Length: 233
Length: 156
Image (tube, rainbow over all chains, first blue to last red; front, side, top):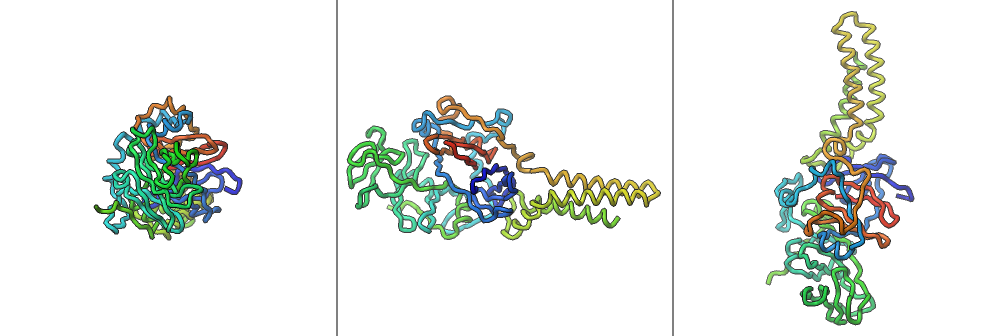
């Protein structure tokens, strides 16, 4: 922050979203927003670094030279069990927003861009495999990986092409690793949003930050959010 | 006696109020959270001064009280306020409920003992790829790290 390195510690909880405190100034920060809410740096905002939630399989194939947090052997028995997410789904929440037909623990993929916020029901996105939508007027594309669990979001524009790309899904097993094709150029694109063949080869789509969150938490910090559900057939 | 009791009340408030407001499974309004965090921020200093005042008051009370019972009260008050000063320094979340990964270690992607369908939070900074398993992050919650020459904090 302003050239000063901060060291963060877990420090509390606020409506089931945790608080952290930096050792250098004693400021308290909200985890979900990265905003300082109390202390000398109150009002400051940590810069968000683009991240993904991927399965180990998908990530390893993309980044075989990457490194993984090893954990602390002393606390290994405390780490979450395999089906932690099923248990978490049954955990009650202290705040609720029973609107738009949503339940507190519904998983959404949240996108905030161009002054608007929108939550995409995770299970519906997995079923659709490819979602073309708009957030605040900006065209976005949500793509499900070959593992049918990992999801990424991109700006639905091919650099250098005026026309809407009109992406559609491919069967990756039959298409040499490409997950989608755009009708405008006929190029094939992988899960990293990069064209691996065709006129656009070498180009990559612009990434859009996306947060996988429970509805109650996403809605708490995005009061004006809309919800995407797969259109009924 | 009055001074010692005031010190006890102040120190108790400094410790108990944030614990009461900032706890799991309790809805918090923005104003009470702001107040609790303000108390938390200054509780370390306040409880120290309170403890010093309680010790001074305890000494004075000891001198005034000839009876054992009076002196025991003097000691009890001073000790209690000192204990509260120590408790004000305990980070319940990091020392009791969870523990930090203070010196994070990393293994290569191919050597990690992780199931293929386990989920990771992944970043790539200046060409360097790093992953944080969610099952691990769900316990530590906060990992201070440096990736591709950039300081970052991974949270879950």
